[in-house]
Image 1: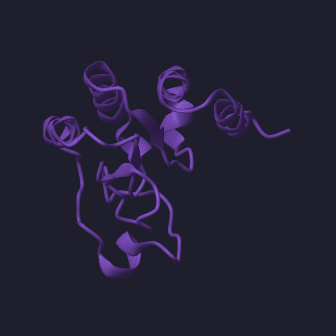
Image 2: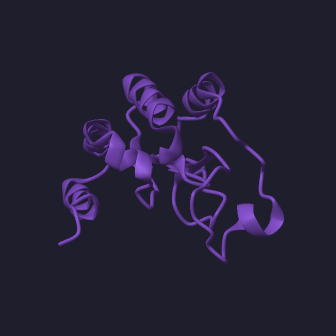
Length: 132
C-alpha cells in the first residue's frame, strides 16, 4: 500500500491541517509571521472536514496546526468531533494555550480529552494552573 506523508517532513503517515494563520504569539521562526503564511483567518470547518474524510484512506492521523488553532476553539472542537465521527484517525492539535483556553477552560479540557493522549492532557492542564 502507498503511504501518504505529511507536508512538514514526509516521515509520518498523517494529514497536516493548517487550521488558521491567526495567532496571539510573535514567534520569530513562524512562517505565518515571517512570510505572511497562508493568510487563513477563520477556518472553513465544512471544507476541512470534507477534505480530511475524502483523503482518510491510508492515513493514520491528523495534525491541526496554525497559527494558533485554539483561537477558534469552538470551530476546532466542531471539526474534531466531525472527523472522529466519520473516521478512525488519531487527532492531534498544536497549541500554546492562548487566553481563550483559560476563559473557556471546560471546552479546552474537552478538546484535549478527545484528541490528545492522557499524559499530554496533564501537561496542558498544568499550563492552565494559576501562577503561585
